[in-house]
Amino acid sequence: MKIALITDYWINSDGGGVKTYLTNLVDEFENNNNVHVDVIFREGEDKENHHVPGNKLLFSMRSFYILNRIRPNVIYSQGAWYCLLGAVLYRILHTKTKIIHTFHTEPSHKLPYLGKIFIQLLINKCNYVTFVSKALKKKNEELLGLNFRNVEITYAGVKNMKVSSHSELEGFRKKYGISSDSTVLLAVGLTALKHKADGAKLLIKAVKTLKNKYDIVLILTRDGFYSSELKNLVKKEDLHENVIFTGTVDDPAIPFQICDIYTHTPLGEGGVSIALLEAMSMGKPIIATSVGGIPEAIEDGVNGLLVEPNYVDIAEKIEYLLNNKDIMAKLGTDAKITAQSKFTWERTSDQFLKLSQ
Image (cartoon, rainbow, N blue to C red; front, side, top):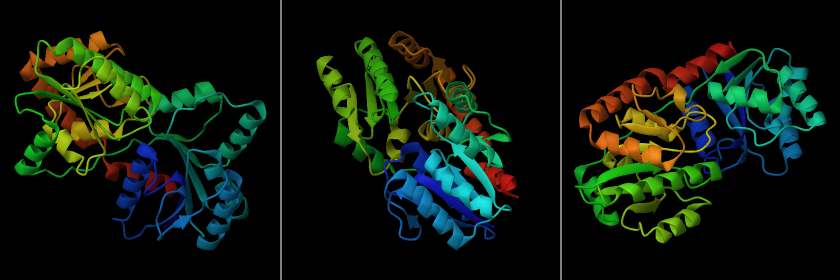
C-alpha cells in the first residue's frame, strides 16, 4: 500500500503535538513491510520526503503535482484546508484513491459563509474523517457547523520511554537544585499557547498555597511564547525556589521519572495530550483539568484525578494525594494499565490501515 501524508508540520518543525502524532504514526507504519509512506510537508526538514514551502495555495497545487508523481492508494491529509485541497483535486482524476482527513486542533473561530461551503465541499470528498478525540469532533461540529460522515476517533498513542540511569537522574536533580526529599510536580508543554499557559498559572498559584506546608517543587519543561510571562509571575510571587523552568531537556524521560505527580491543567485541549499519555505509561498519578479530550483518558478517581480549572481545587487534590500515598500509588498503576491497553501507536496505525482498505 502506498500512502501519501500531507501535513503542515513535520520533522524539525514547531508543530508540537501534531508533529509528534504524525512522526510516531509514520514510524509505526514503517514496521509494516507492505506499507510505504511519502510525506508532503510545509514546515520542517526531511530530505527523504517532499518539502513544499510557500503560501497555502501554492502548497495545495504543488501537493497535487507531487501526488501525480507518486500515485498513492490512499492520502492522509491533516487539519488545514490547504492540506486537503490537493488531495481532493487528485481524487477527482483518480477516483479509486481514498482520502482520510484528520482534525488535530480546536477551531479558533467560526467559518465565514463562503468558507464554510468551500470546506464542506472538500470534506464531502473524503472517504473518512477522523478526530484525535471525541471532544474535538463535538467542538468542530458546534463551531464550524460542518457535517461529517464516516467518522472515526483516532487517539494518539504512546511509546515506551527509556529508563534513565541513577547517575542521570541525580545529575538532573543537582543541575536544578531539586532535593530528593522534595515532592516533585511536573507539567510538560504548558508554555507555548495561552490556554495552556493560563493553566500553568493555576499550578503556580497552587504551589504558592502549599509551599509553607510541604517541601514542594513544580517543574515546567519546554520553552514557549509564554515562558517569560510565567517566569515573571514566579518572580512576583517569590517562588523561584519552588518553580523550575528547564526549557527543552535533552532527555525528556528524566523529569517524568523524577516527578511524584504529573499535573496537566490547560484551560482548553483538543485531543488527548501525548505528554499526559507518557506520564500515564510511566505509572505516574495524574491531576488534570476536565477539558477537551482529557476525560477520555482519565476517569476521575480511577486512574487519575480531574479538577476544576481553579488553583484552590488543584491545591486540594495535590494535598489529598500527598496525604493518601496508597491511593496515589493505585492511581498511577491504573493509569499505566489504561495507557498500555487503550493508547498505543500500533492500535492507531491498525485503525488507519483498516480504513484504507
